[in-house]
Image (cartoon, rainbow, N blue to C red):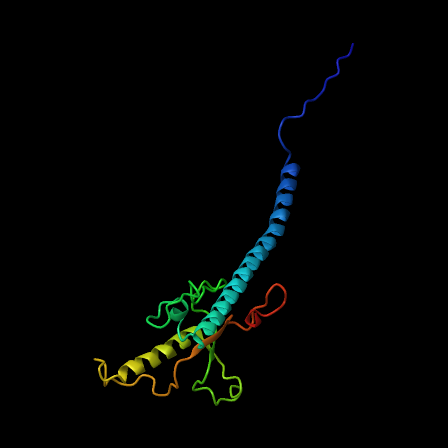
Amino acid sequence: MHKIISKKRPHGFTLIEILTTIVIIGVLATAAVPIGQLMIIRQQEKLLKEALSDTRRALDQFYDHYKTYPASFSELRGLAEPNFTIAYLRDAPPINPFTGNQYDWVIVVSGVTEYGGAPGFESSGCYETDCIDFINHNRKVYQNEIDTNPGNPLHGSARCCAECTGYWGIWDIKYPRDDRLAINETLYKDW
């Protein structure tokens, strides 16, 4: 009787099996990265739409109540006593979800401005400026008003806004960059 000798295979994986597994995991990982990035962009776009719609709704409610557009974000927050104490927006301006900056917006101002006679602005009465310029302009107008009050201890100091025609009201808020396309191929600035 002949005994059949069987060779037992040692336990473990071969080099080919290990390399094949690594390649498969690598392919799956590279496919998951763009999907993850797309999900992040979709979430940012959702937050951008919400920020724009909440701000526009607050501007409309403010105008309906006061019959004027707010000249500062503190008026939208209800922190401009004694006249503007109703809060329409908790965080104004909202944080831009793409940049994380609260003041990274284009503000469309309403009413008569020193740009009122400039080409392209004659009929609309609106002008686009960045958020910081809007805040600085209205701050200068406010300081100039305080300066003209004889009871003010700062009376007699240099005029800071002699060319200003008055406060700018916030008519609209827009995304600041012209070159950013959304997933649906529209420009964020047109939202």
